[in-house]
Image 1 (cartoon, rainbow, N blue to C red):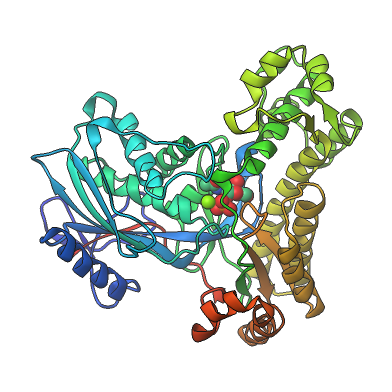
Image 2 (image 1 turned 60 degrees about the vertical axis):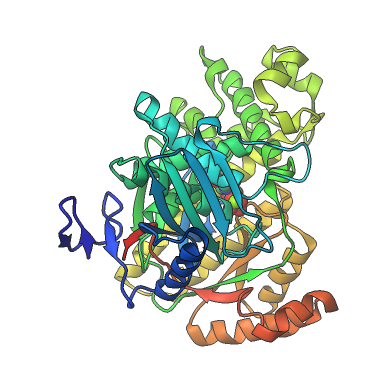
Amino acid sequence: MAASGNGTVTAATVGDEHVAVQQLQPQNKAYERLIKLGTFYTQQFGLKPEFYVRVPGRVNIIGEHVDYCGYSVLPMAVEQSIMLAVGTDLHQTKLELHHLDEGKFQSFDCDLNALDIKLPKTGGPAWYSYYLCGIKGVQEELGDKWRPVGMRVALCGNVPLAAGLSSSSALVSAAVLATAKVQGMRLDRKQLASISASCEQYIGTHSGGMDQAIAYLAKQGCAQHIEFHPKLNGTPVTLPTGACFVVANSLVQKRKAASSDYNERVVECRLATRWLAKSQKLPNWRNFIRFIDLEEACKLDNAAYVQLIENQLQKSLYTREDVCDTLNITEQELETDFLTPSTQHMQQFKLRQRALHVIQESGRVIKFRQICEQLQRRTSKQDIEQLGKLMQQSHHSLRELYECSHPDLERLVSLSARQGISARVTGAGWGGCIVAMCDSAEVAADYVSMLKREYYAQLPVQLLERYQPNDFNDVVFATTPGNGAELFVQ
Ligand code: NG1
Ligand code: MG
């Protein structure tokens, strides 16, 4: 049920074009956590919250490191989420943030007239910076129409941090939704997703829009094929009947915003695109930085694109000099036009490997979706095996060509393979989680027990102590596709 403008309550489904305001009810999945957060809000501010926001994390089934090149991805929302309890104060312009986990996340406040997202040289941004990104995104979207309004916020989250499950984007997207609501904007899901994707870049990561898109477009029961080009679109994809997806956290944390690995890959993709565009003698080759735009301009199919890369990018390592010579740019131009603040140190570029990964991975996403659609009409064991193969190929490519795996992720993937289960790193990598596909809930249960025994029980004692009481259920779990962003009133 949802409240409409005049206060009456009308039926609404999550996944509508806009985010409907729902009445918070005991049958809502997140009810208990939201009520607990509401109580915390009241303790902090002495008032009741005006509304609640819930934004989920996500697991990407296939299509890794392709979104920033314009290619489509296939994620689903997980149950874990970020939640906000929000109130406003029209008489002032202060933002106040209180995290339920006060020990870990210190309270924060600032004047909304002086928003300042600080990016320290080392250690990565403070937790509340992600919230500030969201506010800044809405402020820029509204331009002259922006009026700062005091916001009191209590928040909590159970998306594992720095684990490739998109805790950062869930927080940014939640901040965008809350701020948009306070500003009285029309809450269009695609528009909010785009604002959230652009403003997360204030954190310094040149990411694509996958996480923010699924945060808003997810629907219970299916994954989403998310396309970014020519415009943002989500198509529900029904996963094979019986298939059960398991997420396993390696417990290796990777704070992307505190390292340059991610942006280095983005830079290499942009340089490779420009290089290939020039090789095709396109008159406007200097305009290309995304693989997908070149594909369109040259009308390349996936196989022809792979061929082009193999012909034009033969070296396994390119130096600054190679790149500058071919692109007719000076080193200074390389630094200002291609290298981001965190990647100024780059001396060598693996253009061939990165390009091959992106183009082949983009092909795997399309195949994965096609097979899922075939499986809707007829179930075939071969098709399911084919999906597993695509996941294995994706992982292999991320390890060998994109170099974003980690020894502990490799251990998880090998243990999976030994049990006949296809698994791959999900999210940006270098740590974080794997996602595995099992044929049935029973197979998944066996698989989870095996990982608990063979991976988690072998962890160093300090870590073991932390997880034993709850049996690792928070770090290795089967997951089903949940809803995207939700807004509640009580
Ligand atoms: P995670 O793993 O959630 O940090 C990142 C990017 C995505 C995408 C994946 C790799 C952000 C906010 N998200 O996700 O856009 O590029 O890596 O596929 O940086
Ligand atoms: Mg993230």
